[in-house]
Image (cartoon, rainbow, N blue to C red):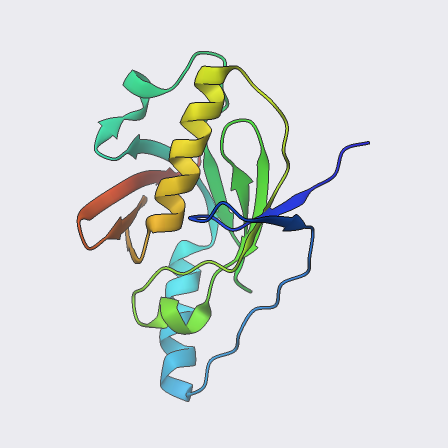
Length: 155
């Protein structure tokens, strides 16, 4: 039997699958900013670079391209290349141009050691992200040290 688990990205803690809720916005201005940003963000995004390295030069062969999908109600899903993930984005933070995910559920399927290391690097960077920028068909996630990952809108 295959069991999904909650993986707290950025932490070594694993818990049985749980339901997370999306926090609401407190002010009308925050809701407006959040709605505008989530509309820009909504859709499917494919990873193109990780920690400044072009994906084509660092991704193990045979691995699916890591991706994220955002819905207009703040739900997030995707893949790290092997495993599926699901979460939600904090809309209050998003309205301020910040990136903050709720605890993230992930399947725990195995892959080659290289593929697992790559997926771990992707998830670690995702957990470190605090800043978000959407310009046209490019999504960038960053932290105080700079850009962590870049995505392009899936066609």
